[in-house]
Length: 430
Ligand code: IMP
Figure (cartoon, rainbow, N blue to C red):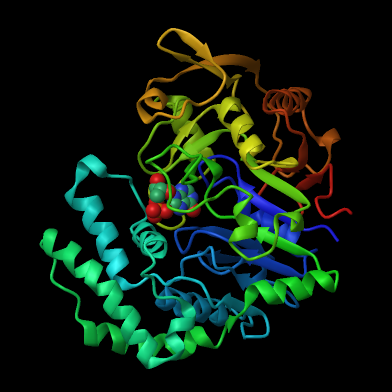
């Protein structure tokens, strides 16, 4: 049976929510493998809007198992709130349809405080994070002092883990003129929330192995985008996890052979939130128009997204680093009515033409886009359900994108409604 990984192929916000929802109908298991509640996935089902940050999108569909893998960092209090909100909307959530890996590291209040303190105090190092404690929680994971889900089960273990963690954090906090952590209060908070988290705790690697043996289909749901990857993104203006498709294996405990198809989600233009280089960024009326037509405001933070033309150099690169088999091309309708469209096909770096994003941050910042111009179309593509519904110029635009990124379109999404999708290749086909 085919298993599919869905990853964002730009800086996030490519419209993954709808595509994941569309695919999850055909999957048996939906697994998150990185990130935390910094993600923002909006699903519209029969007119009802569901907003998810931490839970896998499959949770809103009955009869599916949703899994949070060890590659995620989990805020237990946020988990509780998100479950309660969805339950209030009529979504059924129980240990039968939600499992959390026992080796998932927790995001604690100290992580959020540290994240926000760094962002506020030290403007030189400002990343423009979501302020949710994601980075500091991952730091503690690789620093081998994180508190993980399994640690919540035993008071003695928990105390030892807290002491190890606070030795580090209190030292850091003294240096930042923050008060030391109230150890007793933290342990009490953790003991109070423990039953909520432990109810869903499971050896996820084992569950997934059994599901695979039983021939079940797994959908690995990525968050953020490949350009925010800790290794291959626009470092240091990135998130703190591996976002690229290989992480689906390490972030859940399946081997790399479990991945049959990588679907890269690609928006018909480019956006980014937060700081960092963005060669094809538009500071003019066209950028303004893309933002307005595309409703480009952050789901999690409400921040206005920076907008620019489609950057084929970046997407060719992320298709390579994630081994993308085919892309889902989204929000083509936002380009309706532009007289001309530009596509970034290379960069000028200090007078030399280059065909990839260089690694050094200062080089990235100096890259000037080299554009190719294409004619736009005046007709509406919104809601198109077949190629025949698209104007010839729109098809030409899509075909040129495929050529430039060296990757075929598997799906074309033409509105937030799930039915407004043109299927070229079924990622789940064996
Ligand atoms: P963090 O993940 O909160 O540490 O933020 C690091 C960077 O990733 C910032 O530029 C954020 O704006 C960006 N980021 C994090 N999550 C998302 C997302 O879901 N969509 C888009 N950008 C994100």
